[in-house]
Image (cartoon, rainbow, N blue to C red; front, top):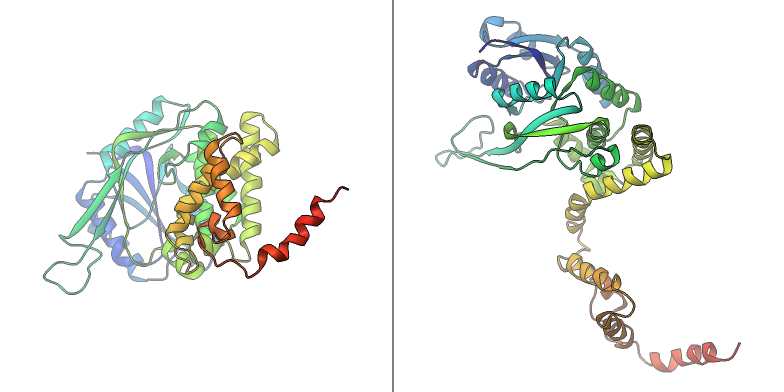
Length: 376
């Protein structure tokens, strides 16, 4: 299979040399047909030494660029923006060194975008995998092995005509899709300028900007596979430093990051659909809430003050509250909640269902009842 002159894979690195070697070996063995631009922001000198020997990976058409060390996300964003400026093909796809691409599906994605100018990105079905230790070995090898678990779930295309509807439907990851190079450059120019401190919010920024820009296609076959238990990833390091979604929302820089995120995406959405900034802002925030709510709930369940029953009880209570006022069920449950003293006032949150009645509470509260019952 010859080199495909329409697509470049932008492989961004920060050390993890063994994973880079594995990525290149896979590309070489599978006769990877696309150009590869390697943007290295690491400090491991073994990487440039290995990649300087073109004969080691004769079946990979690659270019290696060494960047200053990625000391901060600002350096990382600047590296990607500069690297995108070096891409000379019509299309580009982002890659990490613990991912594997299916070349045939990528080629199909390129062909799809060539004949569908109203689509801004094209990917396919995503698989995830874990490499476990061999039953005969006590240590865990996360690079190679026979003990591999994997799974994939069907991903859907986003084909709505308005940017607002596409944004509301954008629950499929679009970061690694094949995109038009000029679109990718514009997106990362915004990423570089905003310079968000939260890495995951920057990925959401790319996700939302892509959905606003146009339709996205997900092909029926596996497009890429991502390793879930690879050590040393940037995302893992970010979580280790700042915590889960719940924890990161308590970081001092979060409010400023989120305000810039909402302002930028809302402006793009308002311009795309010709709606007001306020309408666009409401859509962006509600979409973001829908995206993060499941993971945020999982994070909250890790808190020692939260029990597994709380979400169930809270969900039931919210359903009852949303019933119309004439509902018999709503009236009955409200009467029981308000009149039975041994039901805790916090029962509606599932926090504490039962509580001991306060001594002489009826007598003490009676004076308030009598006062409120007096004619004004």
